[in-house]
Amino acid sequence: MDFSALPTTAFIRPDGENRDEIASLLHQVVDLLVDAMAQAAARSPLPESLVSKTWSQLPQGAVDEDRLLKELRSQLFHSMNAAHPGYIGHMDSIPTTMSVIGDLLVAALNNNMLSVEMSPLFSRLETTVLQQITQLFGLGPQANGVLVSGGSLANLQALLVARNIAFNALDHGIPQGQQPVFFVSEVAHTSFKKAAMVMGLGTKAAIPVATNHNSQINLDDLKTRLTTAKNQGQTPFAIVATAGTTVTGSIDPIAEMANIAKAHQLWFHVDAAYGGAVMFSNHHRHQLAGIEQADSATFNPQKWLYVAKTCAMVMFRQFDLLQHQFRVLAPYMHDHDDWPNLGELTVQGTRHPDILKLWLSLQHIAKNGYSAIIDHNYALTQTFTTAVKARSFLTLASTPQMNLVCFRAEPAGLPIEEWDSWNQGLQQWLLEKGNTFLSLPIYRGQRWLKAVLLNPFTTAEHIHTLFAHIDCYHASHRSS
Ligand SMILES: Cc1ncc(COP(=O)(O)O)c(C=O)c1O
Image 1 (spheres, helix red, strand yellow):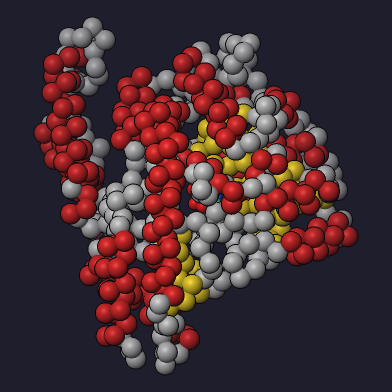
Image 2: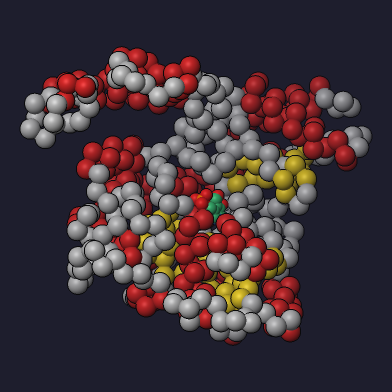
């Protein structure tokens, strides 16, 4: 190979010839990264984005490294800034240091989670660590799980397995005339509709169940809808509980729903994509009581465990069901008796080794560290909620059960149809004047403000300052 058309640092040469050059380049990158992240609090939580002139064409010749480093610097400073203590609008967290290190290392190794021979160490590590997490969730001795790229894929895979079992659908699909349906909260994540669509059932197969004023599934409505579906000739195959809804962080009555699923011989899935982290807190894990009865559960360490994206898993009480009800053999892969080829057990084939950053974070922060952060988040939620309740012009969407507070202003004297735009104005004001980003979800048909108190560096002081800004906006926009 004639390497003259390539920059000398195009690859880290396996003969070590460009070691010093590579080391110098990486040191510059590390300095850049640390500079940017160590100043995250000094720029906006949502800096203005940019479209660089350099994106306009595919380069014919190599772009100079100094120019690329300059571009990278600009990208670091103009991207969404999840590390900022005022970035509290979504379930995006500051990443653990070990996540950053883990992703750097796995990129260098470029293993493939498709099979054991393509990732001999990481495949074994994933199967071992996920088993430990299933035990933390109390899923029993036969449980294990797989990492997937996000909670949507985790929910899809759980329902695929449930569907395959209920309809013996692995090889021949759904028998003619059957109309499979499953039941999920009306405020559940949109991934359930997507899953129903991807499974070929249509989004209407995800039957929405009514919720109470705290966004928790109404058990009577669940039972009624079950009966109605059967009477209409549909075939229910699963019930889904959510542990931490996307907008209000609400927890469905998991144990009661598990009992209903058992009574009707239905698969029971818990979407704990967000709330699963609570299992790491001795003070708060009781809130997820009943999750140990799940047939499957989704959990995203990329959210409340601060593992860099993506890092999500789907766990199964009877992991061997995947072998019989999901596995599609890759005959070009070597079989390892004791360790599964994970690409045969997931929708994805080639997959990034997300396990290293998860394992590193669990080793480094450990249960005690996570428990301390989660307890801090709950305490801050209390401070936030108290501040909302102290203001008569503010109202809560539900009583917070996790570290999400969904609220909005309903200013006296302002017509209801103007509340949405008033809250939208408040959101902008808080970003511009208060350096705080709250999101603006539509919930029950109206605009609300959502705070996710994830960042361990967000303090009570930040909350008090935020509410001072809210008061200021209220005082100056009373009748506008
Ligand atoms: C409760 C819940 N389930 C599932 C998901 C989907 O996760 P992902 O975006 O990783 O696909 C989310 C995302 O926010 C969520 O909040």
